[in-house]
Amino acid sequence: MKLMMFETGGDARLGVVEGDRVVDVAACGSGLPKTILDLINGGGEALAKVVGAVAAAPDKARLALNDVRPALPIERPGKFICVGLNYAAHAREGGHDIPEYPSLFVRWATSLVPAEAPVILPKVSDTFDYEAELTFIVGQGGRAIPEDQGLKHVFGYTMFNDVSVRAYQRKTPQWTQGKNFDGTGPLGPVVVTPEDLPPGASGLRITSRVNGETRQDSNTGDMIFGVAKLVSILSEFMTLEPGDVIATGTPSGVAHAMKPPGWMKAGDRVEVEIEGIGVLGNPVVAEA
Image (cartoon, rainbow, N blue to C red; front, side, top):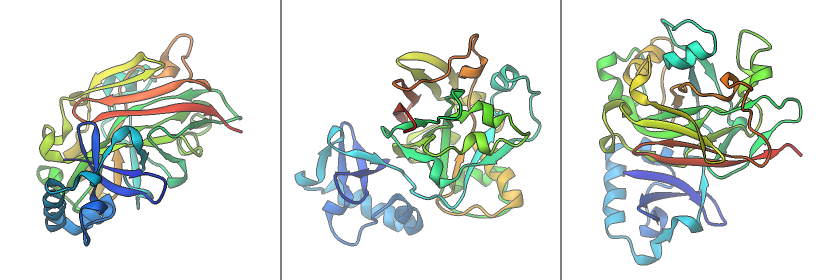
C-alpha cells in the first residue's frame, strides 16, 4: 500500500495513492484513522479498516494527485535519527574509513519540509549539498530487538533528502549544526508498506538529480548496515517508538566531492528517486 499525507487547502489528511490519484480516507466514512501515525498506532485492525474503506470509496473521495499538496508523512517525529557513511563509496569520497559501527546524528522537526516545499538556502553559506536517502518509519516499537526480528518493526519506507550545509557540518566533529538548518530536510511524499517492496527495501535503485542531471546513482543493497541491522543497533541503547523515523544514509556522488563542488543554488530543483517508492522533489529558494 502506498500512503501519503496531503492538503487541499485545510488540515493535512490521510490518503491512499492509486496511480495518479489519491483516495481521501476521511471521505470514505467515519471512525477511520486521520493520519499515518494514527494508522500505525491502530495496528492491523486500523489498516484493515482503511483497506476496506478505500476499496468501496465513492468517486468524490478520489482526487487527482496534481490537485493536492503533499504534507509531511509524520509531522513531528518523536525521534528522527540519521545514519552517516552507510555506503562505502560515499565514506571513501569524504575521506573516511569504512565504519565498523554506524555514525549517528539527529534531525529536529524544524528542519523538515514536505515534498514540493522550498528548500531554504541559508544566507550564511553557499556550501549547500543534497543526500538521497532511503528512510523507514517504525511501526512496532521496542528495545533490544534482535536483527532477525528487525524488519517486523518497520511500518513503511519513504524518502529523505538530507540537505547539508557543509561548512557548518565541518565546524566540529559533530555534524548537528550542518544538518539542522531550518527548511533543509525534505521528507516524503509517500510511505510504502513493506509487502510492496523487497525485504528491508534492499536492491532498489536510488538516485538524486539537480535540474534533471543525475548526481547520485546507486542501490540500497550497497548499504553497509541494512534496515534490520539498524533496528537492532539503535534498539540496543534506546527504545524505538511508533512513528520514529530513521534515514539510512546516502550513496556517493554528493556535491562536495565534485571538482569543483556542485553546490545547489537558488532556482535549482533537486529530486530524490527510489525504485518502487517514488520521487521526492523540491525547489531551492534563497533565505529571505
